[in-house]
Image (tube, rainbow, N blue to C red):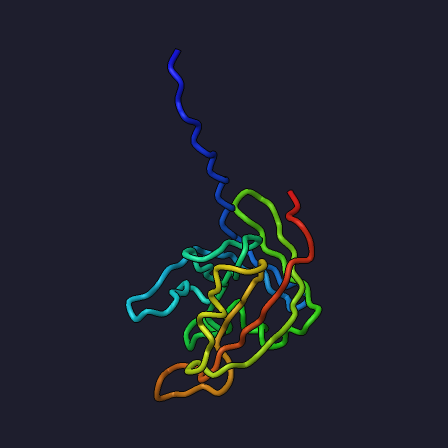
Length: 165
């Protein structure tokens, strides 16, 4: 009889998010996994109607911050999926559906307008700590010389309960 050491079973990976819903703001958007652009910033889907999930960080429901971001608008495409994010209020509900059909539900706990130069990236992209959902888009004044907005709208949400099938 041959005896082999048992290897610990790996926990199954959390399915990636595929849809973001902020019902109170009229937002329903498909979610795409994204990485890091050549300039070191988080990539965003080119289609402003879609939202990106930072695939190198936690998935929604895992420990740490799951980060979703999208364009607020585009000169050619118009308002983006996250255009209404600046209207989010503490207490608003958010839901994220994953590729397996499960849904995590969240409650907004804060909304801030933060200048991009002082955005606390380590805190936003935290990989440890309790599960949180961070949703970002551009906001504040538009700076034509940079073809960008000065600030980011940063919405943080905490879980309402477990995933639902």
